Image 1 (cartoon, helix red, strand yellow):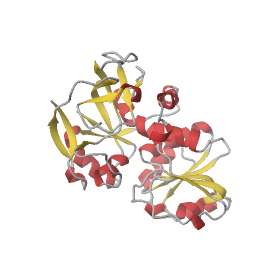
Image 2 (spheres, rainbow, N blue to C red):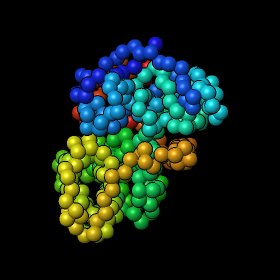
Image 3 (cartoon, one colour):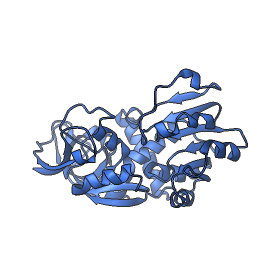
Length: 322
């Protein structure tokens, strides 16, 4: 038996339970991982609350982690016992050990620690698809990125700087503003004291942004649309403040584009997953991106971790350790 955090019903952080569960041998095509660290992300809170529907309950939450292969199922040829691996798209992460499909994990380079990997797989691969595929960020790109001091945001600050793009970020306190700026964000707006639409217009001399990356949701919509230039792209990839209300296409004035991407769609094949992870690992190995693990919680304190995340008490990345 292994310790895991499960939910038996959706709700607030209090529904998270530390339990001992039976873990069967890995099935054909699967491996078992002894997890060294597990990532904490807003998608975990969406699944816990019921905003995102889970296939069945009870369920073990958590979408990313890193550890060592301790057992291999039939027909798995690419991994062996002792391999260091990481993943960022598969439910079931809040556990000491877990079984996972071999085609949903990637080898973890020796130069990257388990803790760093667990803090960056989902968040870092998210930035990669946002900047490389959803919108092809170039040196001339001007973007607005909400929550610039969060886990995804701090990676985005560094990646945008490496690409030579102009990044306008939003953050919710003077401390978070400075944190985003220190990580390479070109301009940072304290949304609690400044109107971000007005500031974006000032910064861009009325032109607006090529793309807005919005993981906040309800609180930043539809104002995010007002930050775009004609034919600009609004990318809604999260709901930290709650879901975006139904969108009237008439709101996309100025021939705006809108998309609702997901990491799972952009890493749906083993080839796409490996390519995305390889690009991320290369950025980290080259020193262009440093992963900030600012909060570490014992697995047993997942409830506190969720409360801190939803209460905007965290910066950078957060992980759980068993």
